[in-house]
Structure formats: C-alpha cells, structure tokens
Length: 113
Image (cartoon, rainbow, N blue to C red; front, side, top):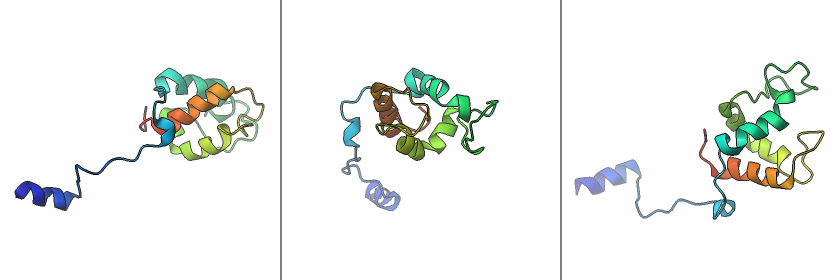
C-alpha cells in the first residue's frame, strides 16, 4: 500500500512508455567522443571557438568549446547544420552522412554524450 502511495505522489508510473523519436530506432550509436568532437572541431570551431582569430561575423555568444556549449544550442544546430543544403558551415563541405550522424547524435544521445 505504501509503495502505491509513494508512486502516486512521485508521479512514477512503471507502465508508462518513454516516447522514442523514430530517427533513433535502429540508429547507430553516435556520441561526442565517437563523432561530435571531431565534427565540431573540423566544421564549427574555425568561427565558433572562443580562441578563433577570425570569427567571420559569428555571434560572440555562439561558442562551441565544450560539449555543454553544443548542447546549449542543439536545437539551433539541428536547424542550420542538418538540412540539405545546410546553412552552416557557410562554406559547405559537410557530407550527407556527417549531417545524418549529427542529427542522430543531437536527437538520440543523452545530453552530455
């Protein structure tokens, strides 16, 4: 009885299923360590690192020095770096495969990974 009351008070329902984005079903595991760090370094940090000498007009508040910096702007990154053609990076150069991995990482991974 007490367990039932405790669960009712905490809002925990073991029968409730967590919604999974269809993109994430059978998607490869993509993490910051296996993909994101290299992608960000190669495609973003020339303009979006705090140490960048030429930010090419990038807003000062858009900095990708850490994984937390990326997660803080994940929704915006998905909007500008994933479409075909992407708006970022402005010089292009990202492959469709890399954009797909970026979308999987930012959609399916838990924040911080």
